[in-house]
Image 1: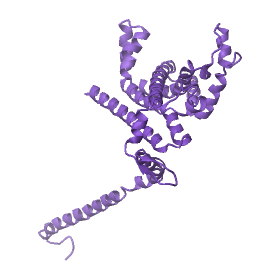
Image 2: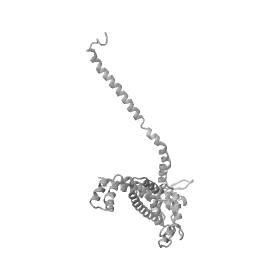
Image 3: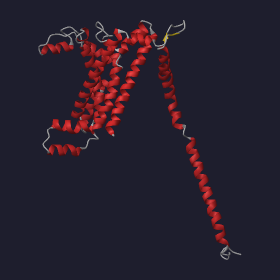
Image 4: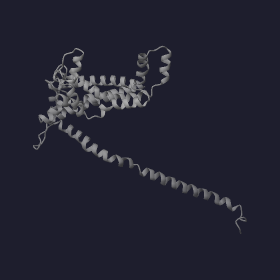
Length: 323
């Protein structure tokens, strides 16, 4: 019997079986594809593994070691002695630590406010598209990518305390006498603060530029129609539109200010007369110069806790405002 002469009643019987077989084959192929995709979940972790190993060895393991050392009297090659919270008591009762903590807070507040204000001003001046603006923005960002050691040496030359120093020569042109800058206890903190603002403002500028793209331009036009001046438009439109950017930059700048070390160490090393001693330089001196590693580790843990608390508080305030 030919295919054209086949009994039609027999054909439907084969239909469900065929469809079931097709679904089974398709379902098996889908499960195999899903299993293959699920089997590759480790691929991103494989690429991240080298960086994670470096972080583990050079960051997380030293952090755990520092936490352990903060409860010990560290005696290299002689064995460590457990002293409990004695190192923390020594740090907290030290007048030098309280003074260094105050200097750190003053420096962090000054650098945070100054860099954010100058960064916003630069962002407003350089907002827009254009080849020249791109070049100017790149030039303004250079202080961020220049190594901090080069920055410190540059400002050390500029802060030369004699009358023929670079900044003193400029002050002489407007009728001011020479200043000691980093060599004068009365002006050393402000001098380091100025250096930090000069280096941090371009970083804040770039983040502000990114945030300005999300501000509704229609609000500017509406405010202009209502007769608002440029200053009023900035205060009532730009600043509220950048609220989330301000909070992020505040956290980053505050952490940067609390952990300030390199510029202070290279410019003044805490001097003159301890006028610029900050927590990080004090920890360095306690741990590596005076060989009191346990006390230095306790100071580092306290600084980490202060930074963590500040970050959590700002994050909670941001969540409360967003509700």
